[in-house]
Structures are given as structure tokens and as C-alpha cells.
Length: 200
Image 1 (cartoon, rainbow, N blue to C red):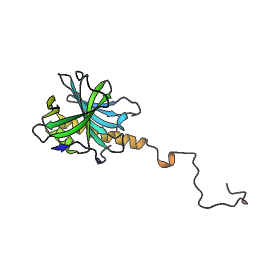
Image 2: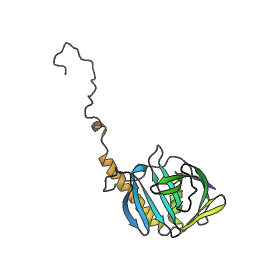
Image 3: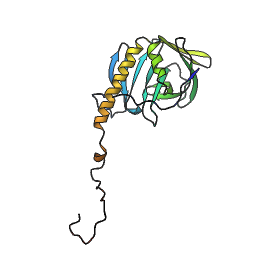
Image 4: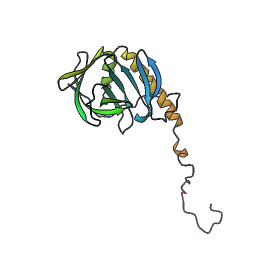
């Protein structure tokens, strides 16, 4: 079995032609049923999301808000009313018939939905998401979702393009160290004599 865990994720990508200052996510584009967006609250990280007829929402993306860069996988359904924000739920995630990923998901209020969110730094999770046809999630031995991953590879490609664009824009707008405090005086390399009236 595999484990969704917290480890360091390689720094990826780059720009988006929008100011990412608001708390709400910003639409990058829609790709074959997937919404590709950037989330300022997660460190201007991009994600993909889609919804299914039975009411389940699926979201996969990057989280750059903490010290570690992570990938997160989120599931939600309006019928899961007993989910408690902040509470942890052990779940199992499986793509097609591949080995199962064991995860500890945390219930979080994201936007208007309560989602179960599991994180990993293993990029193989994204590779499986892109290549496989279905994903199944289980809690306490009970299947809570079995979803088709139609055109997920195309959606992942668009998410990476989004992240490249966002990184490019944020890198250009970030102040250089010399611009961070325009009033800071340059430290003097030597102590000047107070007898010198021209020493400013």
C-alpha cells in the first residue's frame, strides 16, 4: 500500500494574466468538463475541479501556502452533512486496480463546500490521476465515491500550464530585495569621525 504523506515537493512551474490578490479563486480556463483555477489562499497555486451528477465534487491541485509544497486531493458531497470541519478521517484512494493510497483526510470548508482534503508530495499520485480511468474512495470499509476521470490527463496539463503562468506573473510582481524598504540606509563600511562636517 502507498501512503499520502508530507515531504518536500519539487518546485514546479510559472504566470497568469490576472492580479492574484483576492481570496477567491481565479478561473484560468475550462477544459472538457474540468475547471482550471488559481487559488490565492493556497499561495497562488493552481488546481482542477469537476462535479458529478450524484453531487460529488472532486478537486486536485497544489498547495504552496505552508513551508512545504504539496499536492492535495479533495472530495465533497452536499449529502455528507455530518463532516466536521477540522476533523480527520482515514480514507483509502484507488485508481483503477492500482495499489491503494492510505490517507488521513481533513474536513475543510472550501468556498461554499465542506471537502475531505488529503495531501501528498508524491508526484506519482498526479501521474496516476492523469493516466487512470477511475478513482474510488473508501471510508470505514464503505465506498463513498467511484468517479470517472474522463480527460484527466488534459486537465492536468492545463493545470501545469496555469501554474507556470501564475509563477511567471508573481515572480515579475515580487519586489526585489532593494525595493523592499526604500527608506533603509545603506550600512556604512567604516565609522566616520564626527569631526568631519562633510560626512553625511
